[in-house]
Image (cartoon, rainbow, N blue to C red; front, side, top):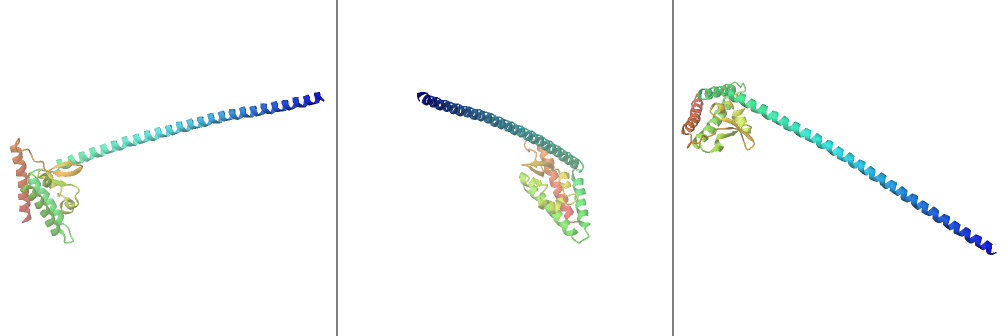
Length: 219
């Protein structure tokens, strides 16, 4: 009887030990699988991070290339614009004869209209020029009167759209300038204290232009 009881106890112990070993084996397997899964997840994240950095680097490279191309295109456009401005200025005769020639072009363009508006357009154009140069001569020290925006709608409507309407400013001594980011015709006043002769020539050129405009108004 004792042997039977002992055998049953041994069997129970063995079963318990086997169950414990199986549980430990399962736990070990689960830990191993967890480690493998963690390693795979870490590897996946590392690959994703590497791919993200690579994509960011490619985007940054393309953005930099686009920036350089934009800057180069802007530089080229600015240089072409400067070259066009230089050619424009060089094409206009300076002085009284040049002023008369440009006024003649304005008159011819206005009066060549066949819709009956020619005389009105001529009066508007020559009147606008008279106002501009009268203001300058009344206060030659005031820069705002000597600065004409090249793209100003009123200027373009009254004078600038006509042949000779822009050239007349070059003929009368204005230069092309960019003031505070705005493209202008600008008559720069010489320093009277350091260059009296230059100032006198500048003033007389403007004065002559106004006189020519007044002569043309009564023709």
